[in-house]
Image 1: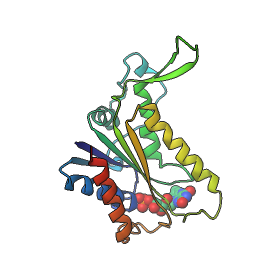
Image 2: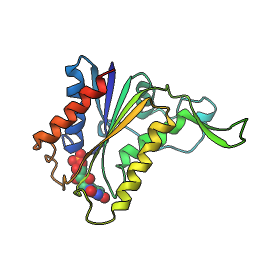
Image 3: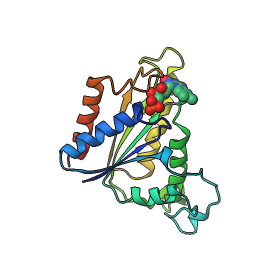
Length: 201
Ligand SMILES: Cc1cc2nc3c(=O)[nH]c(=O)nc-3n(C[C@H](O)[C@H](O)[C@H](O)COP(=O)(O)O)c2cc1C
């Protein structure tokens, strides 16, 4: 089993990275081959909306390190995607990655129903695990519906890519302390066990 872990926090060795590393650590205990990618280390751009990918589906026309990563993601059995919550949503780095996944998709008409549907050329059946680190505790003190919306929105990613399965793993109450996850052995152990589970067939 080959697993890629993508950390979309701009903060080095902070909560999201600790969670991604714990998951990958658990997975590697079972013999899985793992790789950590910190998006902050890559030169990446947002989607240009040029629709160039629709002429050659599955290939973004941009020549940055995100185009390479998108191609590489398609070769893994499982994908771990970690993001801090920023303004009740994902980080800018995470959103750039998600927008660029558009390169695998096209819109077509269902010949039977006539309804518009999304088709994806991303290899199907992969396992996804989403790690979401947030400052607010659970339940949230204010605007809890925005967090509910965020989880609903995140569902779009595996559903659009034809995932075999997907799970969410949350860190609540991290505040702004970058070592909050690292200093919580129970949380790290749960993340490690989620990695073992992810790596199991
Ligand atoms: C720009 C910014 C916006 C944030 N917005 C939220 C938010 O809406 N809700 C929340 O719970 N935490 C918010 N936080 C706190 C982070 O989600 C939290 O500190 C998280 O653990 C950061 O992950 P990291 O340590 O991996 O960078 C925000 C932090 C920053 C820097």
